[in-house]
Image (cartoon, rainbow, N blue to C red):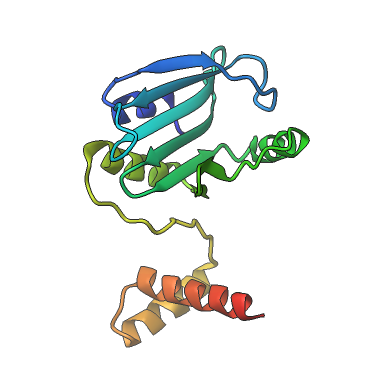
Length: 171
């Protein structure tokens, strides 16, 4: 699970702002900390929402102003509550700023990797990491097929997922 320690280390302990979180979807102990490098053209900002009592992390987001990208991770236990309150408030929860929409990330690892790179001013993988669970038999068959095609298992699975997405788009 994502922690405040992860956030603090990722932003190099540089906190520039903080405030109560004003929505109720995360409860009444929710607080936001932010780290902004002061450059809204080519810089970044990172925010985390957490519970001041339990230390549960509800949400983390990073804005990459240089590349006009915004990534967000929302704790899966609270995602539905967040979406519901967004609708009740008539807020487009997907808009980060201007014409930039959030790219929702599924894993904490992906969130932290992208954020570390953005804060460091480094290039990063823009693909979204998607966790999947497969039966042992499916993994074995996929590994054998990947071997036949002389590619890694991850490349093979990614290819299948991309083909499935493209197929759905065409429908």
